Length: 211
Ligand SMILES: [Zn+2]
Image (tube, rainbow, N blue to C red):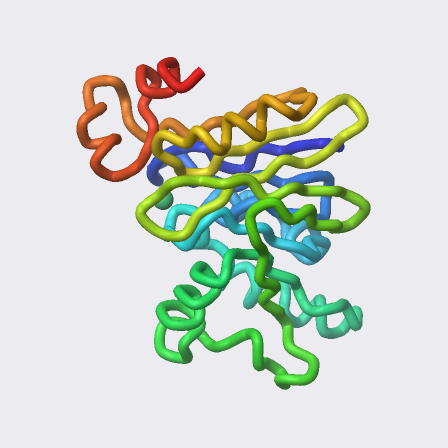
């Protein structure tokens, strides 16, 4: 499995993009602003989006990407783009983004029977089967419902924590897996450790204590 890092910055500016990873050509983990670097052809090939949580830096490109590839996916007769997320994340996206005020409800366009996007609720511990990849849903601790993911590959698991604070259950599970690559979000520096703890994030020093 090939992992392309589309974005791993904490904010936007020239050369900085927020969280998103492309697994092979068809599965997106989070949909931060890094998605904007993909060509239209590359975006149109994505069939599944797995979201860690609802914060804007992780979902910002999802509504715009759907609009960008709508004509291509419809003319190609593609299946609806499946957006896998916790029920709380799905509820937040429906209420605050795909609400026909901020952005159209693409789960009912062009029709409710054959929409461009379909929400798929997930749960911690579940193993998702997406485009020939097995991706386990891992626990996360954040200010909103959140998860991490572990994608199984022949050489071991690619593990992504998503935004999380201290998270013993995550490490308990990760320590049971053959891990090939571990990607941990540390959104704050050590200087900002108190802020990191208050907002349920990790800083490098906090992460070192976890390991
Ligand atoms: Zn967050």
